Length: 285
Image (cartoon, rainbow, N blue to C red; front, side):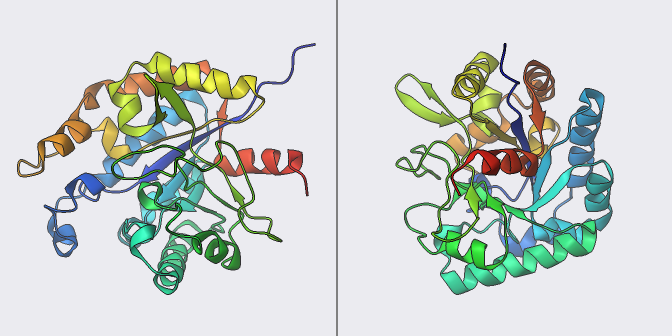
């Protein structure tokens, strides 16, 4: 008898095209409100893609976006997707102290719940920025009532990563039900890479397919992520950004929607909260 297929977590990190770490040194936060927004159109395209595939996902969304685009948040919720927190304004957690992080969590959660009308129980740190430098972060999430976090990338990268972290779901706070569900990684040429975002966009889709199959063969759920701006080849070019940042941000944007459709069709996907419930049921108490 064949085992039941594994439900994998499909996730979207909802932010404007200009709020990424690649541009943080050349686009000031004080200028954000004066830059043309593309998040509604881009997220709308993602929602249409998901509707065509009849799949549900989790949208880890900035509170900043929710405060300015509440109709978008309602549209996501009304389509049956989970709304979760991506923090307020994409500040990396390892640049904060515990009190600042606590305030950031509360501000984002309030904006998201006001806009979407559903309880926020999931969190993803901007740029997977919970790591060995933030030993208090999971404790703050547990104290704030979150059921899960998907904020750890067990990789080594110049912008993020916690190479020594567990690959699969774990409970990071003793005595708490909080679950950390790391993003799935693939081994490529001796390196571990996160299976999502720019790596999925620029590398052959077969690498991500292989990683998902490997994880599922171990009876574990894969966690995949991307951003709405990655399906927008017409977005403005930031000419004064570093070359490496421009290559990472703009490469193969036109191919992303097709690659996503293929990936979704080849595996079983769902909301991250659904994956967490299944995972928690199988974990020791």
